[in-house]
Image 1 (cartoon, rainbow, N blue to C red):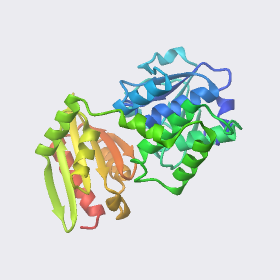
Image 2: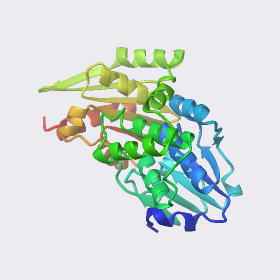
Image 3: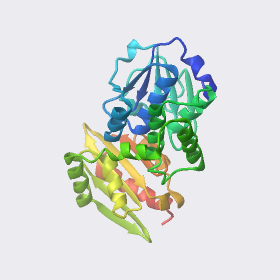
Image 4: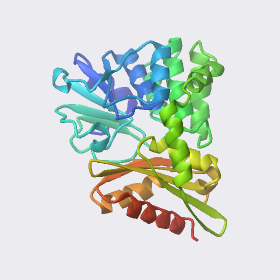
Length: 315
């Protein structure tokens, strides 16, 4: 059942609830879950682990999300920043709702309620929920920090930000006792560890580079850190980058696109969702950053993604 922001409370009142974030939860997921917990009460959980940036955010706002919680002990599970079953490891859900800014519909049919609309971050939707509850006049510093970190992170530090994002940032800075510099300090305190630095450097050394016209696409296979590896290739000059890893027969791919490529028509969320479904998997994300999981050889999958990206760039 689709609901509006001011209807969330009636779906959560008097229930033992948990706000569940996707695997390798990012600052947008953790920040949004924390803000919802402050607003309505309830626990915060995540599947598998948190990203390094999310760990730093969690430490800064003083929370310890429950990793792989026992969902049967809750009356309601609220999936935050998550609308694809593969992101929660196929967890069995009885009663659940969805609050998310991705437009995947995988989990909506059986949800008791959902708020899903296109936005730069789930934190923006949560901020609108807070405003509709009448509690946006003054919010705790930690809530402001959590929401802002989610917005900054999911927009690539505003490289893919809309006017709505800047409106929300302005409102939160006024409502919370936090400076923008504090947000950037939290996010910058998550340096690459040794294994991640090695993985990123190997990704660059193994990358296969193709170009047509003025567009450059880089593809690489890694053992882990797909997102960081794809972003590194973008920073090195690629317009679109894909990094794939294979574990247990499942291939995971992260894709990143430059602002210029997005402006030219690339929508990685749609591209990866389409290709994933053609192989019986799932995918989604944003126009400039997306991911997918399928059972398919990594090399062939990367070649297919690169060709599809070139087609969408009309070259």
